Length: 166
Image (cartoon, rainbow, N blue to C red; front, side, top):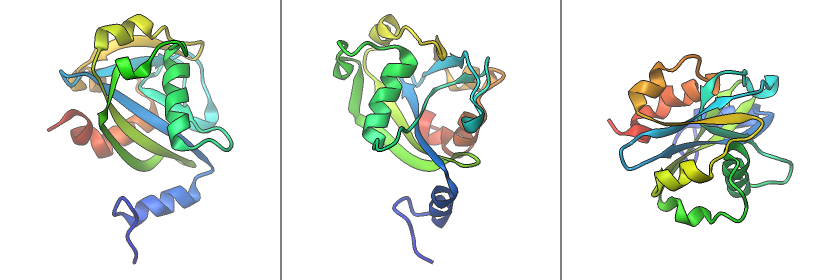
């Protein structure tokens, strides 16, 4: 049995079974609160349902690598205009990245992204026709919000301590 980059053969199997790929971004501030959004539309291919609470999730487009998918996801999901410098809001030096299955047939690169300027992010994050920006929530509050997006719940079951600390 060979190990994958993440150290788990299961990740390789999940990746091989996937027909869609994307990013899931947990934006966390210095108080370990996560930026929560609410889905305004449904999409059966990624198990997104209108009204669910979530974090930034974006499906990769044809020919797009995860880095481009990541930046596009932040801008599109949160409604951040191109003129806004993301470096003034996020600390990429404190970013952690994992890979895992999201829902059946969808494989995700998961990022914990540190927000160095949470007030500015709320100022420039206008939401989009797909999501509404709810605001900063503690782990406990986010876990208590219902309904939550299935893929986000799956990821939190695997990585919550890594995302929020123990």
